[in-house]
Length: 189
Image 1 (spheres, helix red, strand yellow):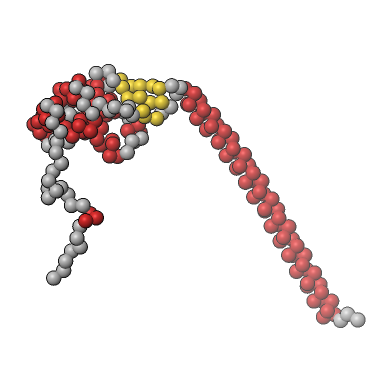
Image 2 (tube, helix red, strand yellow):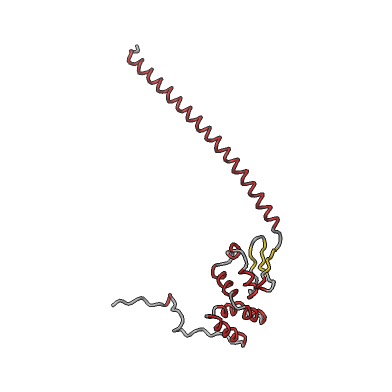
């Protein structure tokens, strides 16, 4: 036979089970609400993604074929873009570097920092020096050599040297910067 203590304990256990069952049901309802909210957010993001994809497709369709922007300093030469990408010519000239200088920063950023600084350095040459190099069809490596002269007088001297057909000689081994791989370790006393 069941004693009153057992009946009270069983009733308390039933009450605790009912309370736990109620909490579990509340948790399920909360999860269902959260799931519904996530689904709404997912649909909203999918709609935004589709809108951005349409905008991007419209922008690509509008940018068909190469476009160019003329540069007055370059004698009408222009840098060319194809679908927003910069087209660097096979033969870079002073006039092209002047056109590159007028390009927006985002367009200039499409080339490496080293190439960008070279193009901009060449564009700062005196116009008569740059046009003379272009008129003689001098290769970009020698245009760059002239542009990196220390000041206008050395640039003119380098221009004359190049136009005479002389090519610069490599500096003597002692004058060059030491090669890091061949550097001997520091000796301690």
